[in-house]
Length: 277
Image (cartoon, rainbow, N blue to C red; front, side):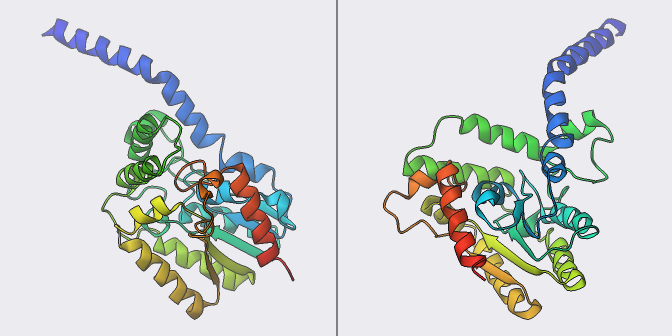
């Protein structure tokens, strides 16, 4: 029995040692990259863009007047609220734009899964080993990266990407975990008197087609449109922005993220459309 226990402990020790490089990389990603680096470079521009990777890849702030893009990977509405609250303590903002995606109303930093990034959040690396192994979001996104490691170039590949991504990230869980922080962000708008806008970035037709099988996405957008009228903020839906162009694929790095060409083209459009006054 004693030998069995020793062998078991040795096996667990080896398994942990093998995981150490991945744990270290994960720890770096959740504590030193993402929002922390982005926020440290903020120079109190009056127009702020925030949100997840959709906002990150859609907005080139150098092409938009007096603006700064604080968006980063997996940045939930909860995290947007935390970051925005801190910015408003020292900076008078004129306009705030927050990307609104199919996961926005359905996740926080811990529900339904821990997200990749953390900012001033209680779960941030209290125990990096437990956090690493508990983070089902990390495991889900690892599966996506493995399955979609090759370059996406065809309509079928774009569709496969969208189906696989949504299955692992949100699946059929459509609880509105993020609504609490959606409301809190709107309350900040009322308290600090800035113009608040939510915006949906361009997606490929293949991604939109997959999202139509999750009927909650259209309901989410209708809810935001209704609340915008009732509570005095804007909602801009650019989901189909590039769809009328025959070669729209040239703007995307995958089914729902813009590449450099897409980002620059879309940012010029935003600057002309939303900052003309």
